[in-house]
Length: 506
Image (cartoon, rainbow, N blue to C red):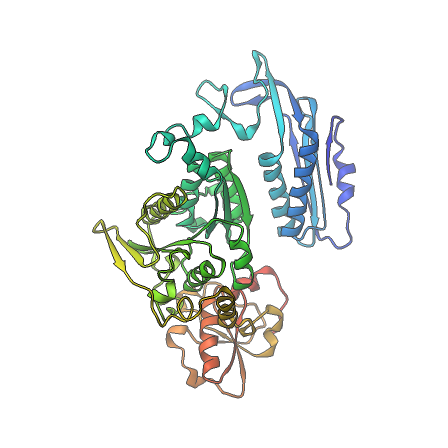
């Protein structure tokens, strides 16, 4: 699957290794030695690798790509030794059932090889050479010379702070933080934690970069539109700090995968704008014992809240005994927001995270809610003690009971997959302004927007499948209808599930 070689590469011969009768797409990449670099004329290029480690890490990268993008065949080759201008230095190829998986998988392998392999290069110019450098540990100064970056230099300014010093940096370097949501809030959070040197950052998001994200999501650029956010975030964060590890979790956080993910980290930061995920994060904090710090934004305002299981003060269900209905307050895509707002709230959230990791006094406890109003520039602290009637953290004292509580709460039987759409009457509950995303041709759909939805219009003897954009509001409504004796289901993943090219019969 991966080779290091000093011999010239034959792309046609390499491409033949990707043949697979199941494949509908093949994508290859060729990296060539060019005759210039940042205004300097290049004569030749040399590569040197730590062979055994490079092969182990490269094999891991290819296996990751194969699993993540459902690739059928993967292969990569990297040249070592002295290369001439025009020589091929790197070749990557993948085959997959569909073109999107092939493109995304090939791009992932290219980026990971660049960021993770212990391979050094030396460029020879007319006036001299660059010396041996690793592209993840060098930066260009105005004089175009490569300056080696060390952790001591990188963290020198923050280590002058009280309560920080080198021991603080070392403590951060040994910390593992998971950020759920790499959007408006997650962007400044990830940048701040990466710059501070949190050693391992997990990024959990299932979305792709859109043009409408760019005005507020500081992690991304125009060139990254269309990329998975986890991949684009990795590109940016790796260029900001080469001394941290980034773990990508391109998935939708759900009850069946959250607990295992939480147990891999010391702290979880919730940066999402939907109530289902926010309450799930709070529940999983108690289930796994992993602290959670959450933030949310509404136009020019926001709030921060922390769940610290060891303090046993309150959970999100103590503050809001009845979980708010999805969409009741509006999300950024509906009500709008400014980059300055999410950047401010994200920075506050990141600061609370750093204070927790460094064992410094912090503003957030499990029974506090910080309300931030950026129009009046005010921060209000609301204290809410634990609710003795809370069905989660007060009535259940052992983790097994909490786990049992959550298994009942999620009731996975309420959701169905795209392939099961023919089993009931499909109802689109999106509002009028959301209907720019069409329903696939051939589907018999009733439109009943959630704001005007009336259960009286449904016939009790029939089955109904509710759909919205992401499957959040539809799941909530289906649960309510079930309580009224109506056979209702929610389309898992919402209409986004229909965008993946699935063949449906409605």
